[in-house]
Image (cartoon, rainbow, N blue to C red; front, top):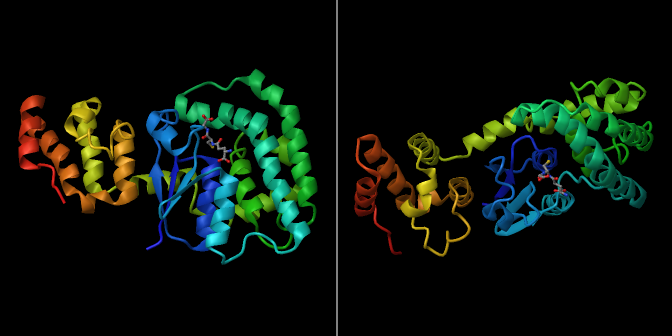
Length: 310
Ligand SMILES: N[C@@H](CCC(=O)N[C@@H](CS)C(=O)NCC(=O)O)C(=O)O
C-alpha cells in the first residue's frame, strides 16, 4: 500500500498545505507528530537539515520544502490536477506560491501570527506590539498584492483550485481572529470571499489545528501511546538509551529521544514487526509501577523480552 507520512508540529500552515493537498487528492496519509521544541534536535535535523516542518515520506522517498512536496503530490496523484495546463495560469499559481514563501510568511505571518497566535497559545507569551506594528506596512502591501493577483477570479490560478490556493489559505486563515484581520481584509472583498470559499472546502476543514492534533494522537498505536505516557509518568524518558537497544545501528545517533522513537515506530508500523521493542519498556514500566527499582525492572524486562534475531 502506498503510504504518505507528513511529519509536522500540529498547527503548521506549511504542513496544512501539504495535508490539504492530500485531502484534495483523496489520498490516505498519516501525521507523524513532531514535538514542539525538537526541531533542532539531531533526530529531526536528520529528517530536515534546516530544522523545520513539514517533511513528507512516501514509500522510502523523503522530501522537505512545501512547494516541492505539493508539486510532488500533484505529480504522483494526478487526479484532480492542481496545476493548470495553461502556461500563464500556471505562472500565476507559481507567482502566488512565491509571494507566500518570500513576502507573506517572512516578515508578515511569522511576525503577526507568531505574536498574536502561536506565542500566546503555545508559549504563553504576550504579543510584542512593537514587532507587530513594524510588520503592519509590509502586511498591507502583501494583502493588497494578493487581492490584485486574485482579481475577479474564484481562485489564484483562475477558475479552478490550484496549489497556490492550498498554500495561501492555511497561512491567511491564521490571521482570522487577530486585530489585524479586519484592516487587512476590509478593502478586499474578493480576498474575503476567496477565504470563505477555501474554508468551506472539506480539505481545509479536515486539516484545522485541532484536527491535525487529533490525527497526531490517533496515529499512535495504543501500545505506543501507553508506553509514552507510562514512561513520562515514571520520569524515565531520559533513561531511554539504557532501556532500548540503542546500540543497534537502526537507532544509534538517530533515535536517542523518546519522541523520535515513537515517530520512528509509527512511521514504520514497527509494532507489528518488532513487538519486543514495544513490550520491553512497557514491561519495565509495569514492574516499576509495581515497586521494582529501575535496575531490577530493566533486567527482568530484558529477560522477558530479549532481542529477537530474525
Ligand atoms: N521553506 C519551508 C518553510 C517551512 C517553515 O518555515 N515551517 C515552519 C512552521 S510553519 C517551521 O518549521 N518553523 C520552525 C523554525 O522557524 O524554527 C517550507 O516551504 O517547507
